[in-house]
Amino acid sequence: MKLQSVRGFRDIFPPDISKFQRIESVARETFEKFGFEKLETAYLEYEEVFSKSLGADSDIVHKEMFIFTDSKGRKIALRPEGTASVVRAYLEQGFHVKGSEQRFYYIGPMFRHERSQKGRFRQFYQAGIEILGNQGPRVDAETCFILWQIAKKLKIEGLSLEVNSIGDQMCRPKYRDALVAYFEPKKHLLCDDCKNRLATNPLRILDCKNESCRAIAQKSPVILDYLCEPCREHYAGFKKYLGLFQVPFVENPRIVRGLDYYTRTAFELVSKEASYLGELAGGGRYDGLVEVMGGPKTPAVGFALGIDRVAEQIKEELASSKPLVCLIPLGTEAEEFFVRRLNDFQNLNVRILIGEPSRSVKKQLELADKLSASYAIIVGTNELAQGAAILKNLSKREQSELSWEQLLAKLKNL
Ligand code: HAM
Image (cartoon, rainbow, N blue to C red; front, side, top):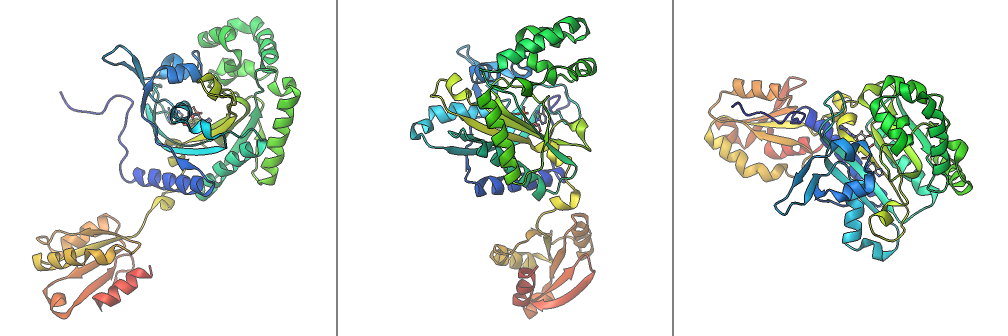
């Protein structure tokens, strides 16, 4: 049998991997700037962590989780998202006892058994944040600000931040009734999934990707007309702070999010130019989740950004990292020289690669070109004797002979 990757899974390698690394480093830097600490939760969880929190009839729990049975017959799931795991860890590690606001971030793979198509992978990567213990609308706007900052730093164009409030357990039942009254007479036009959703969770019909369901949903009642006073106030506060943070946004009263735990604020970052990829990030408030998972009442808000989808939107040159310098030894003595001097490069903002001394200078330079190296440092017997080296600028095709110290000084100023 020919060995190959599992269907729906993929390897990520150069040059794409550099985009992933760039997104991760921008996300990490931005999260840390706003006081978030990294939480690395396990990739495997007991299945209830997700079925209890995301909703038994959510697409993820219903049909997208990778579930295995352990030797004791317990169901184990590969994590399909990060929020439920963070809350499980928050409670298990006793973070909730501190009582104050806590900020966590995560960057890593998630797993969903989705149909493979553009922008949908079975193993995909998220960078996300969660703020636990703060109910004020400022933090909802702050999470949007952080998301917007990341998108700006990555120079992604054509983006729109769409926001909504989906109410809470006080006002949502009335909205649910209004949706049932609207969809019931049109039930025969809905897809089979939505026919079921009408009984289990009619809000989710608004999230259906099926063309005919979307067309019917266009004219359905909107949640904003049903919000109770506290939810209305919270939503107004959220929008006020978005203005203060200077985050541009558009209201989209049809955003409902696909997971059960959301209350009030819901938002999605969409690319107008690449809507086929699906939304680039999504999040919102989940004030009831900590309690549902066995903890004290704790308001919370967060988002996750899809790294795979954002990578599709990044321009090539942005992803390029530090300049590559190829060290080209002409013979083993020169190779040993480079090995002895490797420490000299540790504080320079460059990547280095030592060439193969048995190969000709021509072959080594060809390889340097192929790897898009910026510089080559050539050392042979003559240079060793003179304590010098040849520094070749590969893009300008210029070269000069320098002392080792002069050469290091030059690389320092790149
Ligand atoms: P989500 O909307 O399910 O929310 O996922 C967030 C992002 O992950 C999406 O906007 C998308 O970019 C990416 N994503 C989801 N599924 C896939 C896939 N199959 N392939 C590629 N990318 C994908 C959550 O996961 C929530 N936990 C977000 C959150 C955090 N809410 C509050 N805190």
